[in-house]
Length: 166
Image (cartoon, rainbow, N blue to C red; front, side, top):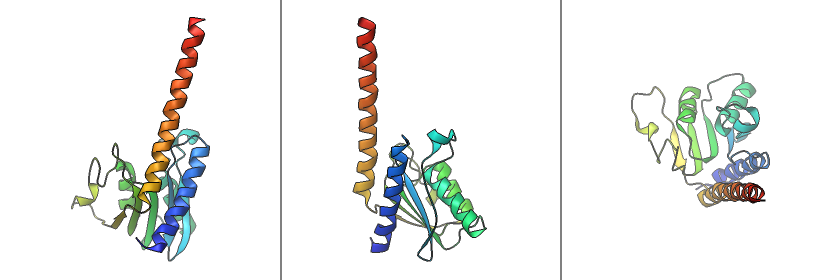
C-alpha cells in the first residue's frame, strides 16, 4: 500500500466523518487526477432524499464538473467502502482508471463480497482495483456507526415501551 494511497484514503475518511455528523452512513470518496483532488464527496442519500447520492456518485459528479468532462480518464477514485452495483456502473461509465477502496461491504459490495462485476468481461471499460487500504480504520468507522445506531434505536424503543406501561 503506497503512501499516496494512504494519504487520499485518510482524506476520504475525513469526508466520512462529515457524513456521520449529518446522520448519514459514514462513507467518503475522493477523485484524484495527477496528484490533485478534483472531486470529493460523502454519502448524502438521507439528507438530500436521493438514493443515488452515494459518496462515489457525489465525488464523481464534482470531478466531472471540475474538468468539464464526464469521462474521468487517468483518474483514481478513493472510497472508504467497497462500491455497490450502482456505483460500479458509474465507474464503468465515467471511465475511471483506478479504484482504491478500504473496507469490504459484505451486504452490497459489488467487487469481492456479493458480486464481482469487475470480473464480467462484456463491459466496454475496465479499471485497476486496489483493495484493503486502511481497511481496519474504514471497517471500524462503519461498525461503530451501526453499533451506535442500533443502541439509539433500542434506547428509543425501550423509552417508548416504558411510557406505554406508565
